[in-house]
Image (tube, rainbow, N blue to C red; front, side, top):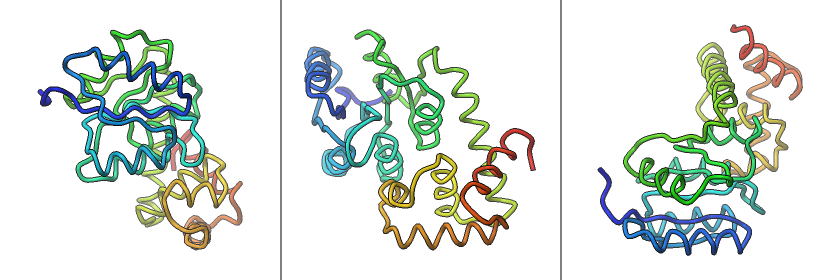
Length: 218
């Protein structure tokens, strides 16, 4: 069991939603909201300083988005459990959150009791997901397996694998740099190294390779 009360940070770019969540959670005796943020960069900074057990994370936020912030948070030591709470249940959002290390995923149709239960579960080390994202979760796990296979077959470094993941999501070099907190020049170097190791000529071919391995294996 996690210690009580559970320290939580709420991240959502919409003030009304953010304040509403804080108000709801403030009425829960086993939850202590220690911070709130309107963007990914702020939530990463707050987490480093306040060390919450759970971060309740929106995905679509300005600057550093929720997926990039989740990736940064799960790399921390100690790392909080990231519980996504978002409007979006599309494949790209679910897959991105899973690959970034989210411990749970709810849509904003979830009620108060479901949100509180999910916070408690993730704080206790369990994974919790909304039923409506089940099919997207399966696709996400398949995508991760494809990246792991490619990494092993072509001797990709951890960072190169992360770049390949983001590249296969059709992100620009600048977006990849922001997600990984590195320079654009560093990303370009990783991309060039990837092209050489994977023996592909461009981003489209690299993405097609990931999709082919995901669907048919090596």
